[in-house]
Length: 161
Picture (cartoon, rainbow, N blue to C red):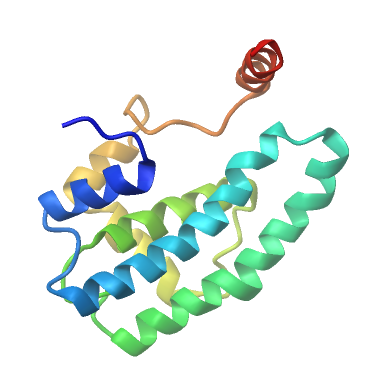
C-alpha cells in the first residue's frame, strides 16, 4: 500500500494498531484533538524557516497561544474525561499527538506546563509507557528540532527548485 498524505498515513496506522478509538464517536473526538495539536505543531515546525525578525516576533505568540488557547483546552478535556487519556480508556493517536506537541513547545519554553498539572501528569504517564519511553531516548528515530544547518539546506533546495 502506498500513501502520501501525512494525515491519511497516521490515521491508517492508528486504526491498524488500535489507537483510533472504539467507534465513530471516539474517532470524532480523536480527530478533533489531533487537528488542534496539528495546528499548534505546525506553528512550531514552520518557525525555523521564518526570517529572523519573524522568529523573534512569532515565538512569544506561539507560546502565548499554547498557554492560553491550546493547553487549557487539553487540561479541561483531561479533567472532564477523568480517564488519564483524552478519549476512551486506552491510549489513542490523540494522546501520542498531544505528547509530541507538548515536547515541541517545551523545547522552546521549558516551563510552559507550569500552570497545567493534569498535562504534567499526562506527559509523565504517557512518556513512561515502554514503547514511547524507548522512542524518546537519545539516538531514537525521533527527530530533533531543525538546526541552522538543516534549515540552510532546506532553504537552498527550495530556492533551486
